[in-house]
Image (tube, rainbow, N blue to C red; front, side):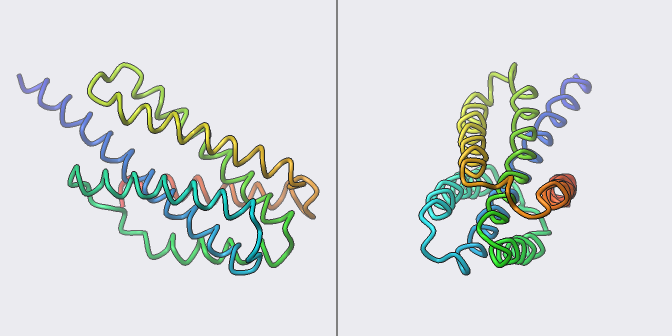
Length: 178
């Protein structure tokens, strides 16, 4: 009996952590695109990706409320950091903005893939699994769009994307619990 309660509580904590970090990530992505669009105002490609990210954010915002999950306390940092990252990469040039998308989306692809594996046999979270699968496919699409728009031609592509990936992984790690 006690073991079942502990296991159930662990699963609930795992799900809460997933939703919390996913909401934080979608919020950060939205802020990156807002920063990029502050500079590249009429960029239809970035606008379209930002609209998809906004839909992802709205879904996870609703899940936080519906399930009574607290958001990460780090949201103010992700807001400012995402916006600064967006503005900075867009100020370099459009290719750098696209390189930012490639870096973030590669990390998010792996992040969502890991969550899919954890949810695979969880019959109570089929809806969450479906959403994560759908959103993962859209994140992969964003990465591919950015690659088609010359992301790899950005000056310092490898160094820039490595740095952005490291920051993104750190943000995921911190957002799970804080």
